[in-house]
Image (tube, rainbow, N blue to C red; front, side, top):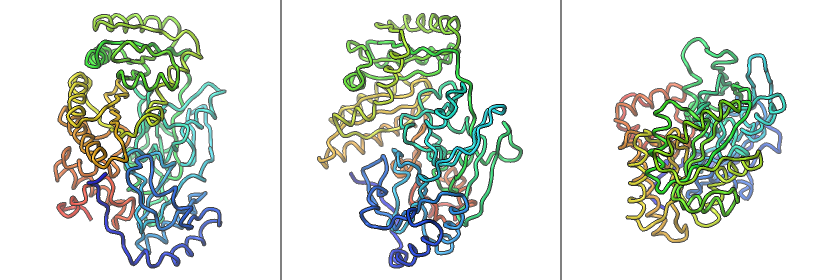
Length: 482
């Protein structure tokens, strides 16, 4: 693949590598520092595996105090820093520079406090997403955001990318469930924004930090909202003769005022891929599938489903299949949450992440098929339909340079399509390096100047996660960026 550049590494920093590693060893135990070339390999990329850069070193602190000491030193030496959670980023957000130190959160895995009266949990940033729900499940609570990678992805990474998930249609994405953060700034200063209260005084800095992709500081602790589990939940499969019709059905469901817990979409290629992997009972004789989940009491679920089925019938639904057991419901969700991994069994792919207004779903789905066909490629669409968060998986052969080039260009065209339809470049994967140059397509230079000014207020040296989010030429054009 081609077309993505990095800031040129500082050779002076690279030449001082031994000195920098020796100093980092003063701040953490020996098993928390990685500098052997072979052991650095797992940190050279993330879930966006098309690009690789071996970092200068990797340090794995266990406490906020260690992070602070590390950052004070690196800021003094002007060494770039790349924060890293579990490395599941799909936009290149955790790919390092050769002159950068990766500060990983994988050893910060303690759940510090569970407060049921206030329905909050305070956790270190390396805690995995699913482990919060596992910790409180027996007491009837859960943590709502549920990315497909929730078995591995960390809360710190979720905050960096403002991650979502299938059930965020009703409960919101990370920013809607984040109450406060403890964060270490570029110079080692420790700050706390928000906390256990539902509405903290002052500016909403937690909201600013959420989605900032590690460019404002390193989050070491988070206070998140816990939600009581519903009485019951029931996923239902709806099959349609075309993707456009399924998209129109989604728009009418939401437009009618019904907000299910989740509305997930699969087109025929995605249905076949996921069914072959999970054997979830997906219908194979339809062109598009919706997984609609409702929750509440039996009466409430029955009433909501009657209304949704009536809407689906107006769109000539071909299959309505309601889960009949907890096992069947689990299989339905296993198929959906395994979609990316299952697709990887049959082809290489690029997963895009644009968001569009629901009224534009039929048009965008039709155009997606046309654009991908023009490149001579295939696509499997599987995404969070309820909030218009598209995830077209562009299938190609990574060993064929021409196919790789076409796949990348096709992906950029699909993101432009989302923006032109009134949407945006990302719903939950972030900008990273993948969509960085497309920021010009969505924002004016004045818009970018304001965003960069906010970043520079936190990191005037621009050492935090460099060469991400903003086009490489934007800083030279801006008036307010450092």
